[in-house]
Length: 367
Image 1: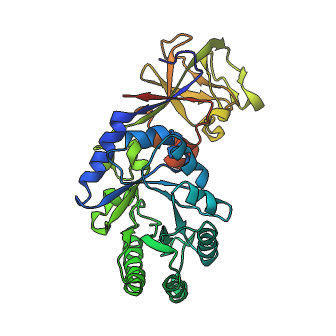
Image 2 (image 1 turned 90 degrees about the vertical axis):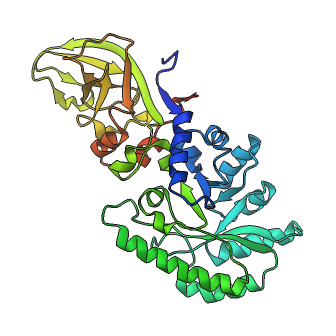
Image 3 (image 1 turned 180 degrees about the horizontal axis):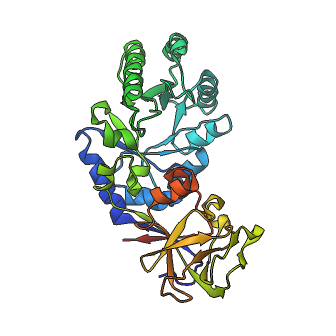
C-alpha cells in the first residue's frame, strides 16, 4: 500500500534481523558484530536500523561525526565508531562519547590535543586503521615504527581496536589477495600489540568476507549490505531474505501510435501501437537515468520495460501486454526485479542503487 506517497522504500525489519542472525551463525560465538550504519544505514534510516539491531550488534559504525550525533540524539547508547575523523569532528566525537578511527599522524595529534584541551582524565578509546592493500585510509608498514613510538608516549589514548579493510573479498577471484591482506594485517597487528603491551580487538572482515571466508574472522566483524539480504555468492543469497523494496504506482496509462516517440530527446520510437504507463518517480528519487531503455519494473509480477528517457519525477514503461490500471503498484526493486538485476542494468553495484534512493521517498518499516 502506498497511502498518499508517490513512492515508498519498504524496510522489512524481521528480515533484517534474520539476515544478521544468519551472519552470526557464520561467526564464532565470541566474535563481536559491528553493524555498519554509515550513510544513514545505506539510506534506509540509521536510527531505526540501529534500534532494531540493539540486541544483535555490539558496535555501530558511522562515517562522520554528524551521523554519530543523529544516533545519540535518538538516545542510542551503543558504542559508536566514527570511521572518517577530521579536524572539526574531534571535539564533537568526544562530546558524543563516540570513538574515532585514527588513520594518520595528523588526526592522532589533533585528537590528542583536543583530549588535553578538554582535560579528559582517562585514556580515550581509539581505533587504528591500517592500510593493507586498499590504499585508501590507514597507516602503512613504513609508518609503524613512528606510530608505535607516538603511542608509547601518549597516555591520553588507549587502542580499543586495530582494523583494516578487504579490497576484493566480494570478487570471484579475490581469495588470493584477500589472504595476502589478512596475513599482512596480522603481521602489522602483532608488531603494534607487542609494543603496546596489550592486545586490542582485531577486525578486517566485511559482509562478503563474513559469508565467503570464515577462516579470516578475528575478534570483530563488520556487517553492512549483508544485513539487507545482499551477498556476492548465490548460495548466501539463498539463505538471506530481501529486506528492502522500492515501490511506486502508475500515475497514468496512455496509448501511443506506431511512430510516436516517448520522453525527452525522443530516444524511443514506438515500433507499433503501444500502451504505456507513467510511473510516479524519477532520477530525483534515485532511479538512475542509465536505466533508460535498459531496465524494467514489475507490475502484477510481470516485466514492464522502461521506454524513453527517465525524467526527474517520473518515467514510462511498456504495459502493452499487462492487464493494469492507474493507481496499481509498481515494484522498482525487491524480489523481482532484484537489486542485482537493477544494478547490472544501470552499470553499477547494489550499494549505489540502495544509497541513491532520495530522502523524499518515504521509508516504511515493517515488523
